[in-house]
Picture 1 (cartoon, rainbow, N blue to C red):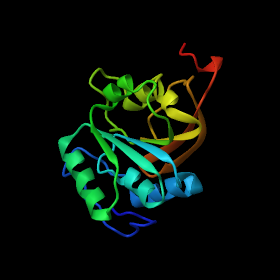
Picture 2: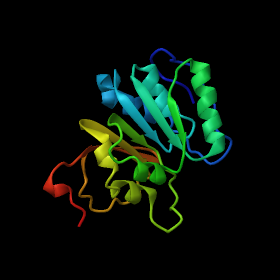
Picture 3: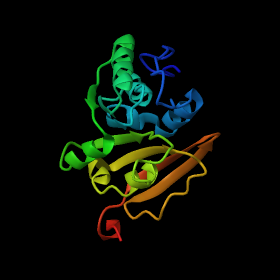
Picture 4: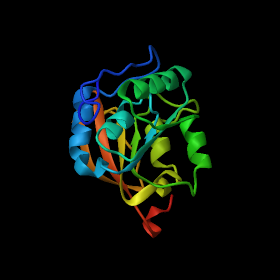
Length: 191
């Protein structure tokens, strides 16, 4: 796993020994190719940050700032190590993503939000993808012209969503990447 382009292009990143499924380089390259210049100067939120690879790639390509949110201690250590290695800075919150979202209403807005949650189910039996897409705070954290990039298992069906429009969906082997925009106004009500 490495940084693909930008100021830290080519540098290898460390990954925690367990508990993460890092985004493959070819998937990361496709994501950033799709985002293009929107990364430059963007405020980025990296949820389920793992090794920090997506946020670090954004910083390397000119993002103004990245807030990494990750619960696992080994992953937090990897993010810190990787930021030091590539000589970039970002803010790190060691917290459960859904606790972070619950406390973040009215916080700052982001132009890009990444989420690469675990593919397995959450403790109550619901899927992370479903829980993210039905979270009412998440779209409030995204700028009106921002993009939410969500990775999921291709076989996982997404529920009917009233908060998001799927702008683009691409499959890359064992990963499907959704590019979503927040729905504003009365259509965005949870039913």
